[in-house]
Image (tube, rainbow, N blue to C red; front, top):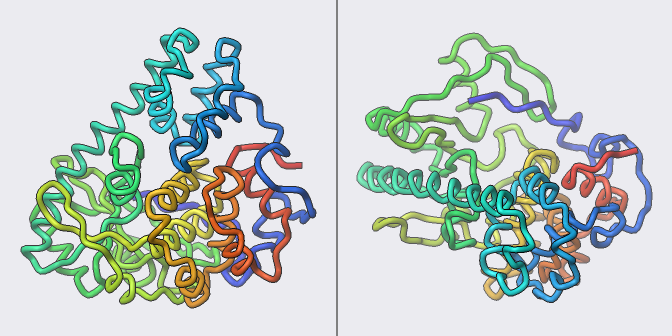
Length: 379
């Protein structure tokens, strides 16, 4: 497993609108609603409008305004690839044939977008088959498993495993089951992936550690997951025992996660997934705090919008706000939900956003975050 780059923030105690959060350290009060202020080209806006129809139930009428024959389709493909949402774009093209006639789209672009979907589907299908085998073995060993992130989203939120690409398969176990899980995975011919001999903590400080065995023990004591792999099964399996590092500033209610988890069926066996509120909290923390909106483009916001679209009537917004405050991640939840609302019109109640808006918040943060998401240069 490759070590992650150190965080941009000097420390977890910084306010969300501290200069450390921003790309250039400047705070400006700006109009940040929607995406018009970003100067996106028509191809970029077309992608956003396509995604709205898929993840937020947006009107297909928004697609009628584009003159498809005049579109730079190579740019559409390149941007969709860069923003990590090619398979979702394929579903729009496939399902909206009345609007997006294949004669308006070059054959090589249609083929390449379809290939991205097919590849995602095939890889995910193989991984989920092996995942179900692992879950069955885990149940036999008395180990409970929660599916995290993509392994939850692809199957039970998007409900089409070709739509959600993932670099690895994430699962959550209880910390006390880590030794049993390790032994089980070794029996199933998994092994730890190689770790780089430098780690960083939540304050961005490097710690050189010699030897893989010592590195693994450091991760168990200080981190929240380790990666194992098997050439015969899942090549990159991320085994979590937490969703935040041991030394993080957050107060994650791990026991509550387990109590609130919902049972689901996967390839003939039973697993668990996070309840909708906990899923939104985890997705927000993962992209905003740990990755600073720099790695995954539009995909995390598609994930959140799709989650709200799928579970909207069952989301307890009041409990979501209470839990965010209890965990200490209210500002990260606010930023992720506000960005999702402004980009994809996700149907998040304005009253809820107002209720969790941090007192020390500058709208310039939203613009800077969007620049990261859309890969726009900053001044």
